[in-house]
Structure formats: structure tokens, C-alpha cells
Image 1 (cartoon, one colour):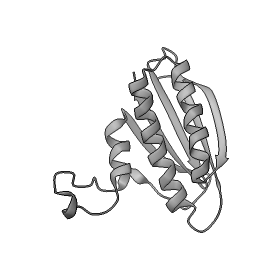
Image 2 (cartoon, rainbow, N blue to C red):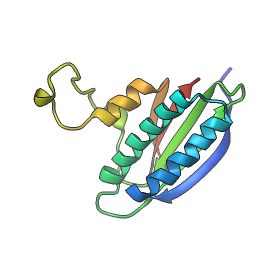
Image 3 (tube, rainbow, N blue to C red):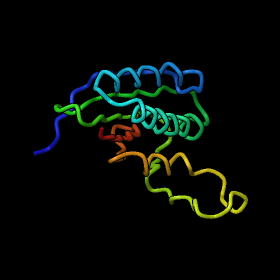
Image 4 (cartoon, rainbow, N blue to C red):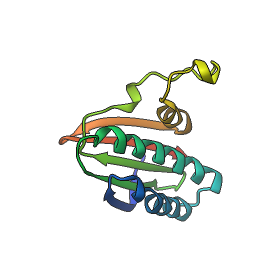
Amino acid sequence: MAESFHTLRRIEFPAAIPSLPDLLASLSECARDAGFSEHKIGSIELVVEEAIVNIIKYSYKEAEGTVTVICSVDNDRKSIRIEIIDSGTPFNPLTKDTPDTTSGIEDRAIGGLGIFFIKKMTDNAEYRREDDRNILSITIEK
């Protein structure tokens, strides 16, 4: 039987760095309401911030736009799902190669750590393109 999630919060905001603190505060409150620990809330904030910064920098490079974030919990409140939706340039971050984190810092390619965090710090991450929108769905369990 598939997990059933219900929405706690839906937030729409300008795709701009100054919007991040209010968005992250709202998501933290959503996770707190669902009973997540401060440690897990820190992980949620980091992953969402990385995803949104990528949207701001790459998806809306040439135009202004908005981002919608939907915070949902499963019926048992054991996992939280965050959907990050934008109408910018199509981009699936999950297809990017994982950066080499074993080399010395001077030998590493610049960038890619945000996507690395998304892949490593979530229990599930999925991307789909629907109705000319990018939808990144991440799930984190307690």
C-alpha cells in the first residue's frame, strides 16, 4: 500500500536569495509541527536551501520567477515530503554525477555539492517535469 501524505503547508515565494530565510523558517515550523528533531530539521533546511539556490542560479538565470514549496507528512508522521516546484529551465538535478569527495579540495571540480547533499541526506528524491514545471520531491524520515 502506498504511503499517503497530507499537506501541512504550501508556500509560494519569489525565486530570490532574500526569500530563503522566511521559507526555511516556515519549513522548519512545518517539520517541528510533525515532530521532527532539530537535527533532522537542520538536514531538511540544508537540502531545501541547496535545491532552491540551484533553481535561483540556474533555472531562472535569464528571468524572474517563483518557487512553490509544499510540505507534507505521511499519516503516521514518520516522514516528511517536500515538493519544490518551479517553471524555469528544465533541469533534473538527480542526473548529475556525484562529485568526487575523496580528492583534496584543490583537485576537486567546483560545484556539485548541493546535489550531493540532496542525494545523501534524503531517504528518497525524485524529479519529474510536468506541465512545463520542474518538480523535485524529497522525502526524509524521522
